[in-house]
Amino acid sequence: MEMIYIKVAIIGAGVSGLSCAFELRKHGCTPVVFEKQSQVGEPMNYTGMWASNFIRHFGDPIYYIKKKYNLDIKPLCRYKEIIMKFPNGQVNVKGNLGYIMERSSDIFSLENQIARQADVNIIFNSAVKVEDIKNDFDYVVVAGGYHNPADKLGIWSTTTISHSRVTRVRGDFIPGVCKTWFNTEYANHSFCYLVPKSSKVATLAQILDSVQQNQYDSYWDRFITMEKLNYEVIEKKDTNHYSGIVSPMQKENIFFIGNAAGLTDNFMGVGAYNAIISGICAARSIINNLNYDKIMSPYRKDIIKLHELRKAVNTFKNENFDMIGSVIGNSFVKQLIYLNPLFKMKHAAPVAKIYNWFKCH
Image (cartoon, rainbow, N blue to C red; front, side, top):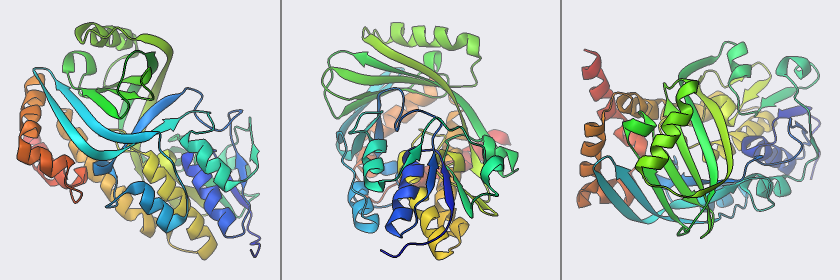
């Protein structure tokens, strides 16, 4: 392999940063990777969904990444059923719905799988800032997962700010069978979800929007009480997440990828797949002097489309969630949305946009 003498710094050894390092190394460029934590992977062990109808590309996402980028990812298991609970009803969907990934510091986590294939040295416990290193490198790739660097450069527009409480719980679960709850009494206009890691351990989380910090505990207690959940909580973490649009995604010698580029949607919070793609595309843009913004423009447009769905749901009351449940429960609609490989959630954006227009006029 011919070495390429380009000085590249990557801030953040998460999914996007490690994907970028992986691709740079393939082309003979060894980046300097800074990570503020002392290890690769999320400090809290949790599981996340790769829902096929939220992923841009058609077909199997893992096969696509392997074939196109030669990055080999192994999921925890297949995502084979979703149980959606509405205030006064329930909808079950079975099929090949996607994959479940482990996000942790464990060797089998998504982050560590990519780290092993990237095979790059990481400088841990290094909370560097863009402005401190941008003059020391030819390129700086921001992969830290936070909106602050883009905001400082004036290229960030916040769309929503949400709070999440993520817990690891012990109980009896069926691997591959996930649950979601929609109820304004305990989730406001967002949702709660459960994703099993095994038959005995799962991730149970609550996402809230427009809720004051002093109300977090009461919303959580209401959720647990109303749904009669008696799981043993092993671990708990509260975080605030800023969703937004970054434009442009490259400014001078600075590239933004993953969450730092606003590539996690604010409708259901799906972002790991886009993180991988953006990291690899940033690396290829650096190596081949490509227009990164042009390459990532379709992904940014998808995020904007999903934001229309978020704006619509932000107006919902429980009767609206029940109505959505009854529509999704229709066998034809269920087949169209969840079991049709050509349908993506972004395709519902035009309907949401019309709904939002009527709500505002």
